[in-house]
Structure formats: C-alpha cells, structure tokens
Image 1 (cartoon, rainbow, N blue to C red):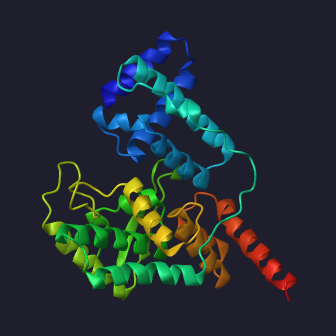
Image 2: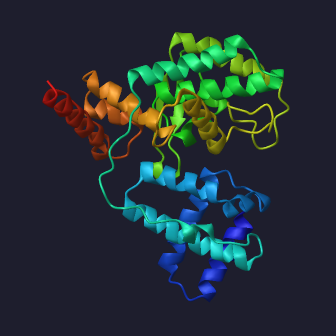
Amino acid sequence: MKNLLEKFRNYEEKLNKSDKTIKVYVKEVNYFLDKYNLNSIESLKIMEEKDFWSNWLEDMTNEYQPNTIVKKKTALSVFSDFLIFQDIISVNKVKQLQNVKNDNKKIEVYSDDEVERIFNYMENKIKENNFKRKIDKDVYFMNMVAIKLLYKNALRVCEAVSIEMNDFNLDKSNKFYIHGKGGHGNITRFNSFSKDMIEQINKCLEIRSNIRIKEGNEQYFFISPISKSKITEDSLRKFLRNILKELEIEYSSPCHDFRHTRATELISKGKEVKSVSLFLGHANVKTTERYYIHQDEEMMEELSEV
C-alpha cells in the first residue's frame, strides 16, 4: 500500500495542494488503512459499502470531537476521489455522510441487569451447544471472550481485535498489554483479567492452535476459524448487535457502550480520575472527566425522584 499512498501524494501535488495539506491527508489515510486492516487493493472495495461508513462514523463519533471528524472525513473523501480516478472504487460514499453536530452527546451505558443478561445469554448459548458445526461454536466462543475482555477492561473495539499473542503473560501473571491505536496515540497500558477468564483464554488458545492462520495474521490472538484471519471490528459489532436484538436491549454504539459502562462503574466505586484515565488509555484527563459529569447527572436525576 506504500506505492498507493505515494501515488496519492503525487496526485494531490498535481492538484496544487499545499505540502501541509497533503501531509495531513496522507497521515489520516494511513491511519485509516491501518485501523481497518485495508492492506490490499481488493480490500479497498469495502469503501463502496454504506454500512462500512456508517460504522466508521459511529467509531469516530465515540472517540473524537466533531471538528476532528470533519477533518478526517475531508481527507478520506479526497482519498476516495483519488481511488475513483484510479478505477479502484466506483463511488465516493464519504460525501454521503452527514456531518456530526457539535453537541454534548449523552454517554450511553448498559444497566447492571442488561450486562448480566448479555453475559448469561452468551454463556448459555455455549452450554446449550445447539450449533450446526463445531466451527460455528468456536467462532461464537472467540467472539464471546473478545466481548468479555472488551467490557471488563474497557477496551476500544480496535484494541480488542488487535490484541497480540505477545501481549499476554499467562505464565507469570494474569496481565496483558493494550496498545493504543492511531488517533489514540502510542499509549501502551497493561490491564489484568480475572482468574475465571484464564480458562476461557486457554480455550481460545486451543481453538487457535487448530487454525491454519493466514499469513500476516499470526501475531493476533483473536482469530476467526472461518476466515482464518484476525476477527474484525465489524464482525465483533455484528455479533453483539445480534445478541442485543435477541434480548431487546436498546443501544447507541453496541461495543463502545460497554466501555462507557465500565468507566462509569469504576467512577461510581470512587476511583480517582487519574486512575480511571490510565485504565481507559485516555491521552487527556479531560476526556475521562465526561464520565464524572455523567455520574453526577445520573445522581441528580435519582435525587430529584426521591
């Protein structure tokens, strides 16, 4: 993809764009390609799909301020025009995205009951074992463990699917490393998982050992037994959306709402803002303070009902 980015750079230079603008465009496009694992010309075809961009906008809305999203959107729209010029895609779907309003969006969280129902549903599904094929059960199990780690450790979706084999230290401790991705900076932190998760982590390793993993995916922990490559962000969201529909649970952003929920739980238990900020991998403590404001608003609502 380096050759493609170089062609993109040259294309923009011929349009008399400034060096500063081109540098920003290339940086944003490079982050985008890396985040969504678009590492071949064929993989770029997904940029023609409306659902892909809906999910992209959902990701961005949960992580960035509206002004930042507009900048990213502009860069990707320009890149899409370039891909059309290169006959790689046929339509610029970015231009069809609506702008994000600059308002203080309420933080959405799951209730304690909803969290319990979600995890009970997944566990019971595995116990009932009504899968048509063993491979279907293995796929379900991998996704379930990814969702559990995502919730308990307040991971971003991109962080959950990008956990690598070397990030775990099962022999000496129950800790694993989490690497901040792209716009989240190079923040590397380590979190721990509970003892009851160790058995399920080991089960994933067993499933993984029987997969002939595609080249370029060997380092990732969560591998789909069907695609034989790392579990994607979209597939993990789809997995959780299906469960939420079955349970008739409303959501804003299925996976990211778990991150909000975990953060709010920690705050309600009296954890300090700096500790929660480190746990979440926030580059700026001010981002974490949103959860404290949310918790105060929730408390005021409860008091007003007394």
